[in-house]
Amino acid sequence: MTVKKFAVTPGFEVGGTLFRPEQLAVLGSTVGPDALIEMTTFKQLYVAMDEERISEVQEQLKQVGLEVHPAGFVSKSLITCTFAGVQRMPGWMSPKGLTKRWPIMRCQVRSRLDMRGVR
Image 1 (cartoon, rainbow, N blue to C red):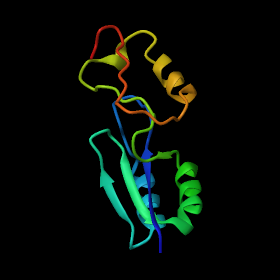
Image 2: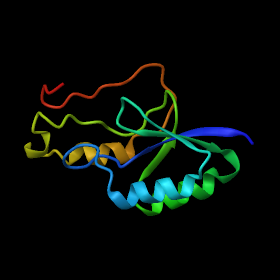
Image 3: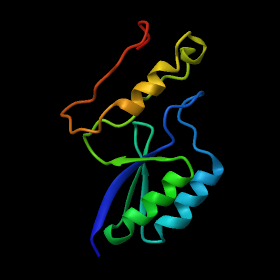
Image 4: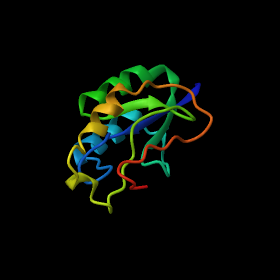
């Protein structure tokens, strides 16, 4: 059995990185008993599981609204702070559109996008 790792995130939402109970239930029931799930400091879950079942599992995760990305140093989705009130700022939905257009690509360092001086 070859183990491969991928990242899972609920995406850019009001209130931060919020997983819904049904998303976690599907994640836990589809990856299998031998999989490992790790919470990263970048507000995403890394799933390490049998490579043969990955495409099937990823499709089920997407069906419940989760985003699936490669693991490691690649651009993924935006992370917002929850204490600065970014959700109350005019145009805060613009970053949500940006995360959909941002290409997934290999990168050497973490990239930061500041909005209105909030960092």
